[in-house]
Structures are given as structure tokens and as C-alpha cells.
Image 1 (cartoon, helix red, strand yellow):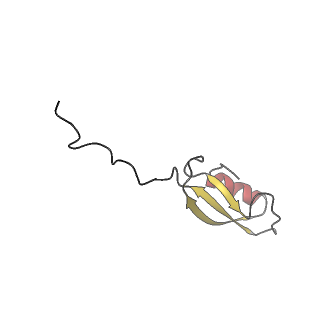
Image 2: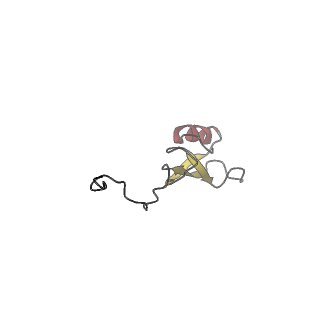
Image 3: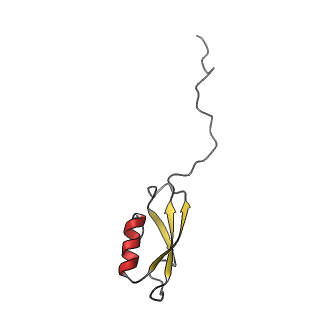
Length: 79
């Protein structure tokens, strides 16, 4: 299910007689927003037919929150 859209992942789960469980968003620098990072239980784990599979979905790159604040006003020296 890795890197699939939620809709496609749900279709694959349904085809395997599994249900979509909880969706949780998590930042990822590697996986595009809206795509599956991982599942719980993880791929290859035995699950009973009809079980729910939780998906952890990318919310996009992490906001590091730090930095210099982006220049804008008052940054010139007037030279």
C-alpha cells in the first residue's frame, strides 16, 4: 500500500476482503501528501478476513518551524 493514494489503498484492501481502519496523518519528506507511508498491521502481516487496516498518510514535508523568518521588512542596509 506504500505510496498509494488513500482511495487506491482502500480499493486494494476491499479486494483483499479487508476494511479501511483509522487514517492518521504524519509529516514525510519522502512521501507526497495524501499518500500512504505505512499501514498497521504492516504489509505481509497475517490478518483475519474483514479486519480493519489502519493507514498512516503523509501530510507533506515536516514544518521545521525554525529558521531566520524570511527577510521581508527592514532587511536592507541602505547602501
